Length: 65
Figure 1 (cartoon, rainbow, N blue to C red):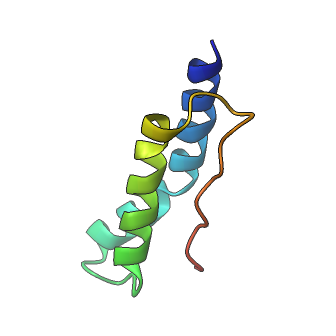
Figure 2 (figure 1 turned 90 degrees about the vertical axis):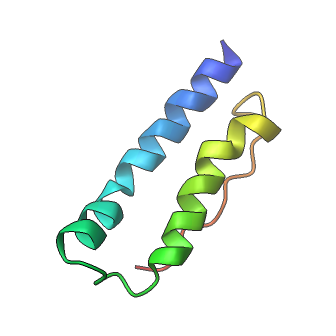
């Protein structure tokens, strides 16, 4: 259950950053710091490799918009 809660929270945070990917794809490279966003989103996806519950997790910092 703790891992499921962590995944749920992580997925919600990822969903809040979907606009970056959509904007990048639709406007063909208009996000100047897209590499930073891509790295951040990958760190979010990988978070369950390091942490197993919400109590222990240290979230990565999102890039500035």
